[in-house]
Image (cartoon, rainbow, N blue to C red; front, side, top):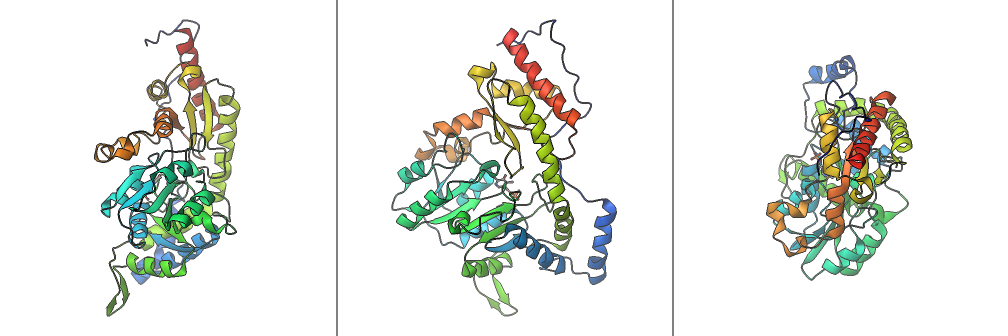
Length: 388
Ligand SMILES: *Cc1c(COP(=O)(O)O)cnc(C)c1O
């Protein structure tokens, strides 16, 4: 379709610099360097030092359930978690996620088997999981996409019936208010849940992640596997890797953690403006950003009502220096290395979500005026395609 601007519609002014989908919270540089003084004195830079221990305790309190280990990033944490569950054969997983979820399965020589998502929640659908369970299945991996919780109770029932392990990619979930993972619902964590503390996430340690498990024995094995499988000076108990978070990262985490509630409150205000402006636009469904997770603000562009595809809207926004992101596109089951598996063939709900979802700029420093300008740009695009 050609887009013909009509004289009645004035084009919005582009943002002078790119407006990204997320911006990291950062403490004042002075506070970071001041907090590093102790590290410089002690010369303890890593290997589970005092800042690491403080942050691990603080994250544990914030999560409010299970046992917590800190890791150097979310992907390594997920890999370690899967490796400690003695899995074999096939792992049923959502295709609508970031590639790291699938890579962690494949890196262990396991076969990712895709199950479609629920069309509304966009999380892995228990009915579709049930259809994919065979004698070769050993685990289910779900992603709490945009912080929207998987149907953890139904998944726990399926897992218990078929004797499967359950792992959650909770990379987007940390912002949920305490008790983050419903301490009173034992199935909510699965066997283990991963959190990512990457710089693009709501809470971050530059690079970092965590695992939360309800099982004390699994937690013990995870701790050892984080440090090469070493138990003490002369004992190596199992296969391990280097998953340790450094003191420099942990100190960043201690400072950004103090800023987290204010960031969540600011994002709530940004979400209110988006909600007020975008909920009246036909063909724009708001699917994330208004819930407590506050990781992303995501709309689904329904082409038949909106008048344009998600991709055309993305291109228009880019031309105005608004860097929205197609989270999560391409669909993981469409990536060449995974697309030949038979389970990748028919995933209609996941495919539609990957074609329709668009994450808009969402971070505390966005001003009211910025958000209104982004909404003006979306309205302008909609008007232009209708009049074309
Ligand atoms: C960010 C992210 C990851 C990867 O986490 P890292 O800490 O960057 O390794 C995995 N899964 C999802 C859904 C993510 O968004």
